[in-house]
Image (tube, rainbow, N blue to C red; front, side, top):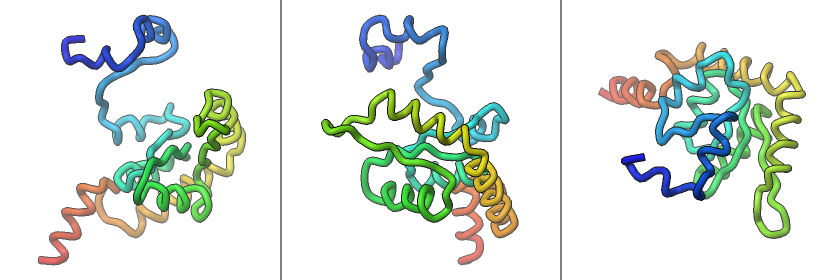
Length: 145
């Protein structure tokens, strides 16, 4: 690729996965999350991603790194119960087996999707606009004026 993104992956990786998925450097996250074929959202749990996932009723698989992401994961998994976190192995790695297991649990239990949809409806009834953090911020600024 001319933009250099292919250097991020081992040689031949994109060819090996080409028939099973599509890798892109950027995509419109809200448009992807609103698509009916999206069953769950693997997220770092940043606030914008959290609000976008919740506003579209998508269950989460949480992979936070630092700061507010860890607190947001707690809300997603333990308070709202619309997602699952990953367990790291003894080396601190989240394995493909762990990811597979959590995908199966999340998709095998309809309660996650039902709670995500209920949370979406609550949010929609309490927030004007499309749920986008940018729109919410603009509404907040207008309110402050």
